[in-house]
Length: 178
Ligand SMILES: Nc1ncnc2c1ncn2[C@@H]1O[C@H](COP(=O)(O)OP(=O)(O)OP(=O)(O)O)[C@@H](O)[C@H]1O
Ligand SMILES: O=C(O)C1=C[C@@H](O)[C@@H](O)[C@H](O)C1
Ligand SMILES: [Mg+2]
Image 1 (cartoon, rainbow, N blue to C red):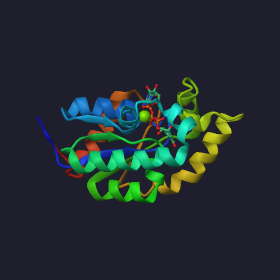
Image 2 (image 1 turned 90 degrees about the vertical axis):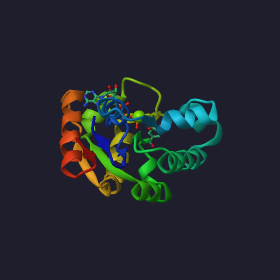
Image 3 (image 1 turned 180 degrees about the horizontal axis):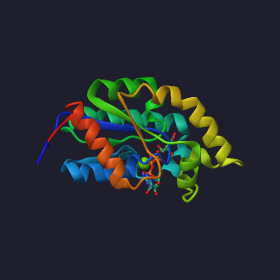
C-alpha cells in the first residue's frame, strides 16, 4: 500500500468527473473520499437545488467555503471532489491551494454537456439554454481552473484510464509514494 502525502482537491466544471473519478481514485489508493457537494447537503439537511432555491447562491458559496475549509484542515490526506464553482471563490481557492494539491480535470464543452444533460440536479443549468449557459461558465472559469497545480485531461476514456493518468502524474510529483 502506498502513501498519499497531501490531500488532492479535484476542481473543474460540472460533469468533469470530480465525483466519479475522485471516488474511484480514493478506492484505488485506499484513502478517504469526500465530496464537498454531499457534505454541504448533509450539513444543511437539504439537496443542492433546494439550498439554491431557499437561500440563494451566495449562501451556498458561504457553506461551501466552510465545509471545504473544515475538510482540508481537519482530515488526514484524502481525495476531495469540490463543487464546480468552489475554486472560483478567492477565499475557498486560497484554502485549497494552502492545504491541498489542486488538480483540474479539464474537459471540452461537448463532453461536459453530454454528461450533465442526463441529470437535472444542477441549479445553475436550469435555464432556457443549458448548453449556452455551460459554454459561458466554461469560458468564464477556465482561466481560474488553470491556476490549479496540475491539469489532467478528462476525455471520453474510461474512468480507469483517467485514474492511471492521475496515478502517473501524482507519483512523478511525489504526492503519491508507491
Ligand atoms: N472519464 C469519464 N468517462 C465516462 N464518463 C464519465 C467520465 N467522467 C465522468 N463521467 C460521467 O459523467 C457524469 C458526471 O460526472 P461527475 O458527477 O463525476 O462530475 P462532477 O465533476 O462531479 O460534476 P459536479 O461539479 O456537477 O459535481 C457521471 O455520470 C459520470 O459517470
Ligand atoms: O458549477 C457550479 O457552480 C456548481 C457545481 C455543482 O458541483 C454544485 O456545487 C452546484 O450545483 C454548483
Ligand atoms: Mg460532483
